[in-house]
Image (cartoon, rainbow, N blue to C red; front, top):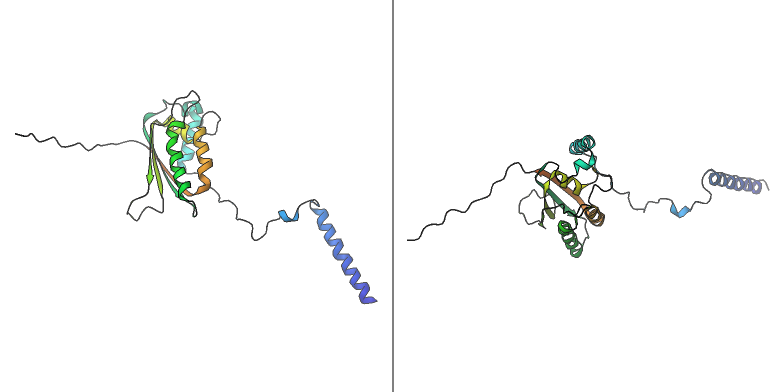
Length: 205
C-alpha cells in the first residue's frame, strides 16, 4: 500500500508540475510550432554597412533626398558593376530569367514623371580563365548619366523615402535575391577613359 500511495503522490506531483509549466506560458500555444532540430536554419544576416554607405547617407541627409536623387546631381558618366553567384540547384531557366529581367531594367526603370534612369546595361556570363573569379557567374555593367540617377536606381539601403527610389529595381531584387548565394557591387564615376584608335589607312598607289 505504501508503495502504491508513494507512486500516486509522484504521479500527482508530476501532473502539478506540468500544469504549472503550462500556466506559466501560453496554454493555447501549438506545441508543433516549437523549433526542433530539423527546423531550417535562420536566414543569413546581411553584412554590416561599409564606409561608403555611411558617407552617402550623410551626404543625402545634408543635401536632402530630392537633390541627392535628382537627374542633374553630380552629372557625368557613372558605372555600376554587379556580379552574381547563384545558389546550388538554381536551374538554367531561372538563371536566364535573372539575366533577361535585369537587362530589361533599362526600359522599366523610370522616374515618377516617366523619364528613364539608365543609359545602358551590358550583361553576360563568366568566361574568364583567370583564377580570381571567386565563383561569380553572371555580371552586369550599368551606365548612368549622373550620380543622382545612380542613387535613384540603387535606392535602399541609402535611400528609403517613398517616391525617391526605383520600384522596378526593387521588384527585381525581390525576384532574384532568393536565387543568389552572393552579390558583389562596385560603383565608380569615370575618372579616365581611352579608346583605341584605328591606324590610318595606307594609301594605295
